Length: 351
Image (cartoon, rainbow, N blue to C red; front, side, top):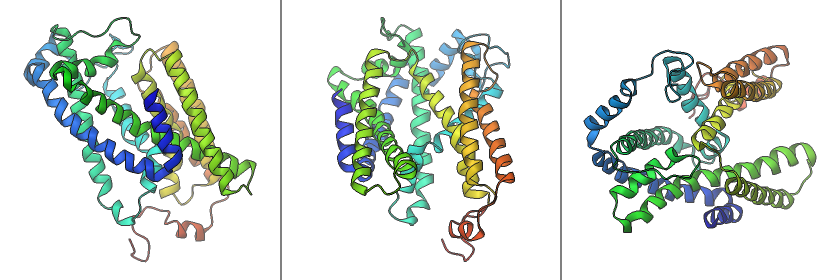
C-alpha cells in the first residue's frame, strides 16, 4: 500500500522525467541486486552440476533445451516444446519490446545520439538479469526438492515465492531488506511507466483526440492525473481482494496481448510505406479479439501447441496487410518526413 502511494505520487507530480530518473536508480538496484543474489543462490543449491542432477531426478527432460513434442503436454510444466519455444521467443523479444510503456521510454530519449548504443546496452543488461533470474529459479527448485528451503503454505501461488525464500536463505536475517529492495525496484520500475502510459492514453489518445480536440493543457494534465489515481485504486483493490492464482501466467498473458495488438502496426508503420491508419486500427482490433479467443480456448478447452498470442499476431499481421492494401496509401511527403521505410538513415545521409 505504501509503495503504491509513493509510486503514484512521484508519477503524478513529476511525470516522465520523474519516472525516467526513478527507473534509472531502480535499474541500478536491480542489476546490482541480481548480480549479488543470483550467484549466491546457485552456490547454496550446490552449483550448476548438482542443480542439473536434481532436476534430472525429477524429470530428465528438465535438463534438455525443450520438452518432447507431445500435445497435449504429458505434464503441466512440460509445455515448452519446440513449437512453443519458437512462439515464446517472439513473445519475449517482440511482444515485450512493443509494450507501450517500453516504447514510450525509448521515445523519451533527450538526444538522438543515445539511440546508437543504448538499445545494445539495454539488451545486454536485460539478458544478464533474465538469465541469472532463470538459473536462480532452477536453483530454488532444486533447493525445494532437497529440503533446503520450504515454500509458504496457505497461499494461492507458492512457486511465485521461491526466489524470495531462496534469497532469504542465503542472506543473514539483517540483509532481508536488500531482497525487498530488489523486488520493489522491479515492481516500481514497471508500475510507474504503466501508470504514466495509462494517464497519457486516457488524456491524450482518447479525450484530446476524440472527445475534446480543443482541450487545454491544464485539463489534459488534470485528467491524466485522475486516470493514474483511479488506476492505482482499482489495481490495489484487485490485488488485495482477489490476487491471481498464478501471477506469472497473467504477466505473460498481458505481454501476449501486446504481441498480438501492437507489433504488426508498430513495425508496419516504421518500415512498410504502404501501411495505413485503417490497417493499423484493424490490426489492433483483430489482434486483441483473436488473442483473447485463443487464450480462452487454450486455458479452458484444450491446450494449444504454441502460445495463444502467436495466432493472434498472425491474424493481426494479415489484417494490417489486407486492410492497408485496400485503403488509400499515405502521402509520399509524410512518409519521407517520418523516414518510413527499410532504412536506418534518411535518404540524405543524415543520422
